[in-house]
Length: 524
Image (cartoon, rainbow, N blue to C red; front, side, top):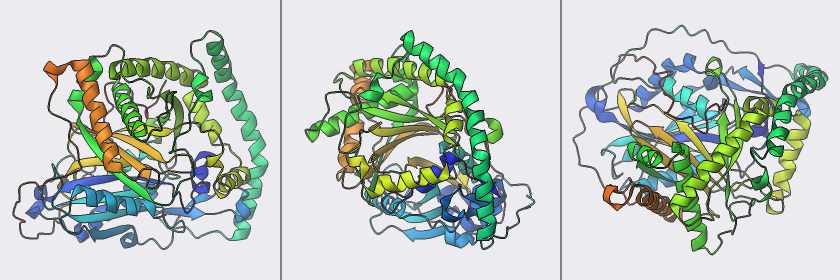
């Protein structure tokens, strides 16, 4: 058994009826590249089963400590049933983008069963009228509990389930997995007692590791290398209250090469600054349309991955965070991106001073009983409605594979990331790159954002204005690809069914780092 860290367990404690704490993705596949041009549900089951040894997440469940006196443990479950975790549905006609978003939102709104391994895949057929997607394509909605993975380890799991070429073969893997007998309540209580005895020693050790970072931070504040001003000036918006149990999902795709051109046109800017500028402009437009735009800038929390290469296959979260201003108080997009680029550099200096790794490790030492009670009271009493928000939204940047990848021989043609929400966070953004595209996918509370299509238009308009401001009208290209109001792709014949017997090799470790560090990657 392996115990969850304080950070991983916190996601479990935050898991409530209105805020299931799983993250995921929407991956769309074109089966025309598969053997026979067709992929069956059974083929996908077999494909996933062959790759179970490549990711520990798939067959691990939870063993709880009585009364929550210590954090739970991961245990290899005895009654693993793959077909429970891999499900199969179809969209109603006409099978367009809006219907896919609605179905994805319903799936993501349903909590996972915490008595089983904490993941589900839902295969969705009938994508016949999604713009830019061949007719007859299908999607796979993944949902994995945030206690088990972060953004970067999610990419590792995705790579384990894909191949570089449609016909690649997988060497025979020896499956050494063995189920574990679930410990009794008495055994878990003893573990919990011993864990609490050791806890003070962990705090002393961690205090010693964080003192140098604290000293660097004080020095940086005194020399005005960075400041904590924005942490004290986060405005309240409609997205920073107690959330409902209902979700909406929407996404917009942009040409990655064009995004990089915009980045190059702004001295000192990074790709992440471009995406933050688009989000800041979109939130400005949306809130202004509701007559709710704050006078001060909105603030986003940006996760920072501290996962090392040696930890690429491990469960849990290796992540810290930094707060970045979105420049929503600035109308001009060029001024906004310059402000964001300057501010993100300042915040990176602050994060480096504190030590992103040390902040992540410190969060793992949180005591179980206190964390669990605090999370439940925060939701039960609706404290998000009365406490000052620490940030207004989340913008997480996850780099995906830079080349096309395949599952069961079917090429993945689109890739969108999905977030979990909680009280005080009613809107989240995932920036996901794949092949030649970069997408911004939003997950929002349906009561707070009843019009996600309009917000997608705000994202598109924000991008258009930034492109025009940086590159000028003479260089402006065709609008970025928007997924709403989809049209059907040219119809093609569906070849006869044919089951593939060939095994494929994994595309693990395929995702390459972008030319500049992403907000989800290690920062020094």
